[in-house]
Length: 282
Image 1 (cartoon, rainbow, N blue to C red):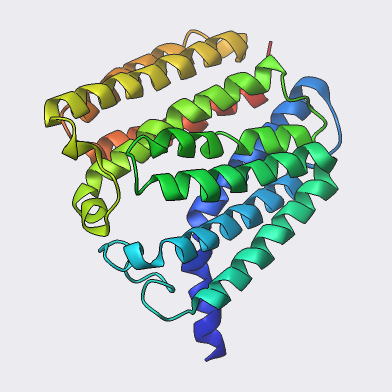
Image 2 (spheres, one colour):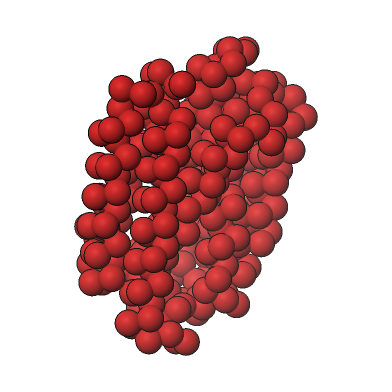
């Protein structure tokens, strides 16, 4: 029984998603240290982001366990399948969430703690209930998804309004919205079966595909501009044009309803576009 309960925790906290969030927080901290120096709190901030994301995921699964049970891709989650009780799910959510917030406070004090609390409020308090009401809930979800680099930046001693981190946060937001949208399109029958608000009810396929392509293109244009303005001079003639070409291909894929390769292009572009900023920012 004990091994079963432990293994049930992994799908509860979604380690791949939590690791991606931790990587975003790690980037924010390293970016600040690269630009300005500062305390070496990158790894505590990343660990806090991982734990807090796990807590938010667990709480989300408590909130949506009934709807998750109706979806093919989520019906085997521990709460949706009945392998874990809601009370135990809440306990895990509290343990992971509070541990993450404690690490945020230790790494960066009140600013980082407040950023973490804001993520919980937006993701679990706003985005999760809005998913049942409007497909535009993804605009709120994008705010939570844009926060990881900011938490690492704050932990390293950075300020909220520094244009460097605001630029990164905008890029993350521009990435999050089409990412959520492409996933929703890929699994729209599942989402509809679970009772979530989906775009295909109010918009024609052509309009949906066109809007998605525009947003994907906007993300790639934003990322290429940021890489060109803030990245190393030695790569400014390579990285931005490459991102623009990739963005054109990804926008075409999105417009053609080829969601899987469009998602792959989105996933690869973000680290490839931002990683050079850590080497030789001018």
